[in-house]
Length: 283
Image (tube, rainbow, N blue to C red):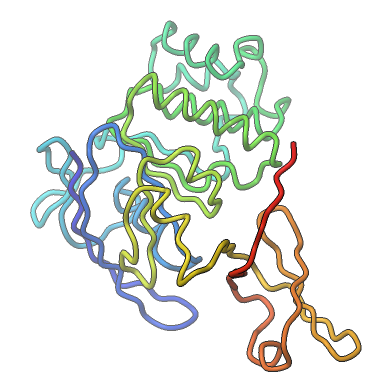
């Protein structure tokens, strides 16, 4: 089990915010961290990794990583970390990138086979696509058999089809090795597919915590469906206003009343919902 009880003041564009997180993570759990930008997700990940200092305690399986007297550096925390940028050694081949972490050829070959990279083991990062480089980065993070795998939006720069493929490979690795995982994500479908638990942060504190179905499928009142998106524009058409909203990979038009058009601000997160909805699903 991982026990986290940390605090850290954060300074942003809107002023000072106090990150204050207390949580426990069961062994083999896959936790998704969600929330708006600036809510403290990446900072929490970096504190757990030992890349950023914060006050408080972190224990894993009864071993202290951090308290008032102890602070282990990242290399002693038995973690794997996958960043948005792939952070591969450009002068090393795919296989050499893995073996640099740990001289275990059998494990390296197993990971490369599981992620369909075995035929690319002698190639260099510059010759790989973004998706292939991120798979190498993921394999490298697993080479030390970490007790905790931390991922900061690892798939955000990839196209939808590649993102879906890598999600399946991440899930396969998690099921095979049982590594406790914490991943920052803004993608509801990704969190639903991968995570066993979703934690939503807001202003440095935990706003919601529970199973993906409970957190991601929330609706209020008698709403039949509800989606969150970004308001891109408000266009006046004759006597009505139309909001252009980005929801996932889709742009949606929604008719607004004059009052709604006046109160909404372009660029803010909005929730689109309806009470009368009879969907048709086709393949």
